[in-house]
Length: 106
Length: 113
Image 1 (cartoon, chains in turn cyan, red):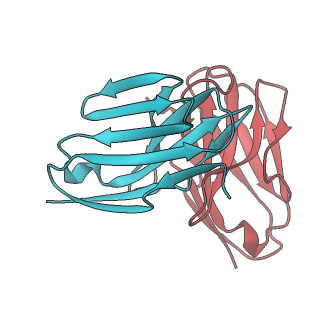
Image 2 (cartoon, rainbow over the protein chains, first blue to last red; image 1 turned 30 degrees about the horizontal axis):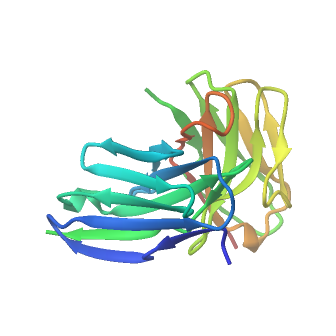
């Protein structure tokens, strides 16, 4: 079993829908990262959080340390949000989930 | 704003050949990392360099060597390439250590026949 699990593996949404991607981890971590990988392959860091909630534009990340769970929400989704979303937990190094492939259809 | 630059972007090798993947960052970051990404798996750490002059093994170091040439550059070498090393390789950097957002290069797609 991977230490960092993401769900769903694949997600297809209609433009405008509210999207939630989940990340759970089985080990203690000090922080959690959310990253976005575009179809061209580049990876961009979206959030790093250790408690509560962070918001940037239409993206919201939340974490519950006690429940070992984090979520990434996208409001008013758009086709340009289509990408792979990756979470990673920080122990002494980053441990990455396998990613969630998101496709937003217009 | 170049950020993290990786070369080459694509490479095809034959089994047994050697090559070096280059990575350079222009953000004055101290820490640099090499990952590989395989289908259905998360990014896996090959080696990292916490600061100039230091390197440490990650999760999957076998078959690889690294050189932190200076503060800007961190190269990854495959001495004798094997088909199992077919992957996409990413270099990343942070100002100082793990507890900061990582800045990634665009990746090198490597195929070993």
